[in-house]
Figure 1 (cartoon, helix red, strand yellow):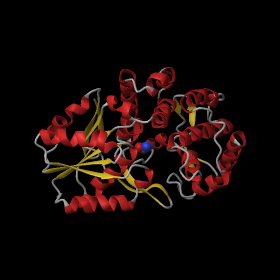
Figure 2: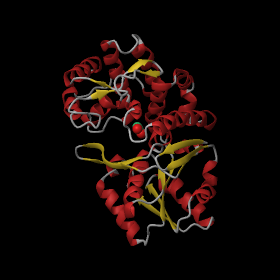
Figure 3: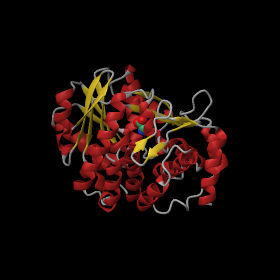
Length: 365
Ligand code: GLY
């Protein structure tokens, strides 16, 4: 169990094989609500959402299940509006609790429903994908995508409990396993070289979702992320290190009209931002050479991924990491360590980023 500190207290992240069976008792130890709303997408609902509802009902909790269509295209204000209307129609009040059961889209969307419903009700996060366990469910970021970009409307709303049961990962489609594990490699790249190396050695077992290997990896990522968000909940400085690979990654992902997976885009972003760091003399020479083979063992050849560099440059302008009109990037000092820069990121020019994207495309073609 990992404890995360927030401005409003602490919450526990339980990472344990088989822990899903304990969910009702873990909730009751922490919360007293009149009604519980399990929110899942229509892929996860039949596999885990209904089971969670049944288990909560058996434990005497008045629980209903609400679903939405699976996919990133559901992470919208429209889905938020449908779900909040459904909760109101079903008589949910201020003494309600949301239980988000699913991957990153559910974590963010159901978290945003909880953050805003009647000005905020508690949320329990039950992540069922690597991405949601390792990243999205911890740290309190919630929100939806809008026309101008991903996650541009949202709120910080820390969960009251996160329960990650690595046994459920066997139900996750293989491409999603690889995409989500990229964030674990990112944690290793920014904070813990030994963890990065261990992930690389264990990549086969992680892709097989062997709970004996996946559990400790999820737990290590949660420990690393918890330490960062406990220190800087609202991303005033240190939390920005979690954005490594995301400045260029988000731009590439948007330029692909979201056809490229988030993990693949972030992996490319990590490589390109490392190229930039090496060129600027901030990142130890040879770091990209260490990153690339590990990421390729997970995702396949990254040199063959092509993207529209001009479109990616356009998207950089709406990036949340832009400050005073200047983009900022997180740069490694070496594998396993971030360079502090100024406030944990480096101000770079649009043209440096454009050149980096164009050079990357040159490699990729
Ligand atoms: N996913 C990055 C963060 O939570 O800050």
